[in-house]
Image (cartoon, rainbow, N blue to C red; front, side, top):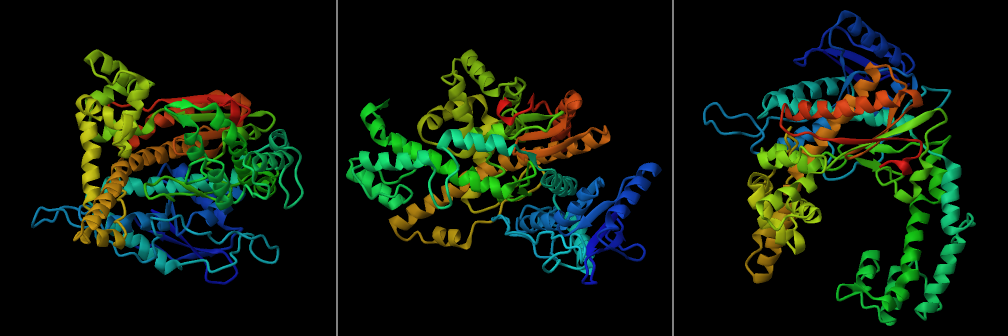
Length: 588
């Protein structure tokens, strides 16, 4: 049973609720409630389902962020939801794919999934822009929206019915429905993490900045250490008026000083300091202040004092996660760089007194997922060890292969998944192919499909978007040798994207299931613990110190459950390393 939750049409906030059956039909009359009443309705319905021993309702809305914020504020639990906006994006992309539908009963061939969205799906290629944010106003609803609140009840009920019908026409309805459920569960997790926030110690953060750059500078000025480096750069490069923050000026000064590069990126500058495979001390001395300045400049701009003022409030960093913000299904973040907490600042992520952080990350997730997707028994065997790359190297030694060192095994396998054909990755690819023909064949097939401009999909059925129209124009413009080269390059680029899409996207599905099982496990056991951070294959739970071991077990059990949820019973495990720390910097 679904309960569709739509913004009330009263103009004063609130919500209209409509019960909808599993086949998309309305049941009973709609109910309109205020924002303050809404959490109580959810709590009552959840409790009634638990007492009756039946499945709780699926709370169904256009966008999880606002209703979930109300529930978090009231500390009310919702077991399941359906985010129609996220699901519409998945279904809209799937409906483009010729192979996404069930076989035609007459021809026996697969046909496109039948889906006509009622609401406007998001563009799967881009992170959406800022959503309307809740505003607090004592004269109106606590979470009244400052802008249009989106589609009304009739539209959402119609969209739900269309999504139910679309899933029934899909090639694998069970898997696709699971994907929609996991994506929506992820939206609940994201809303909870935004509400809880990452515990952050401003004092430690400021001390890290002061140690690296000196005291907090005045507005518009550089920190002392950066200013000293700027002056040193001007002296070393003999450019007394140089502004090191200007890439054109810096590049010109470097080239004038004999640094033969075409970009001021740090890796380009570092590469210049290596001669015949060895670091050159004289070259390093020339560019050392430039590299140090660029390092501190990134710190100053990305997580400096200004960042601290904006993003940390009452000891919490509250980022906004964007579920499905990457086309593969990986998350993105809007504002604050939540998915890029650099190592140097991690010591500021501190548990509250009496609490601790349980940090966990999945070991070599994507190669293990590839073993499952390709049904490669040899790679599955290697994945049974915690260090998959070391296991591959041992197999290489036993077989007399050149692929017998861990670094080589890692380079080769990552190269297969990301399409690296040059250097060490290319050199070891034939050996990897002989050891794991099914795994290499799987990603190679995905690459060929992408090179033709066709779509590929993840295990549960998230389809890659079609290339942009310009891509097809390039493929048609092959009358000249230059045009043919452009077409070949564009095809190979899209092939690299599609070969990684199938693996990264399927790994993202496992991660969604992992998050969902952690969320459910913490709630089911009544633990004083909350998910506060997620990055692809890493999670952080902020919990009471005395419950750390229970939380660890929930996280580990959830990883095993996630494999079974997404892939069923397979001979591959995803080992998870856990750390119990008070500082994120101490997590292994």
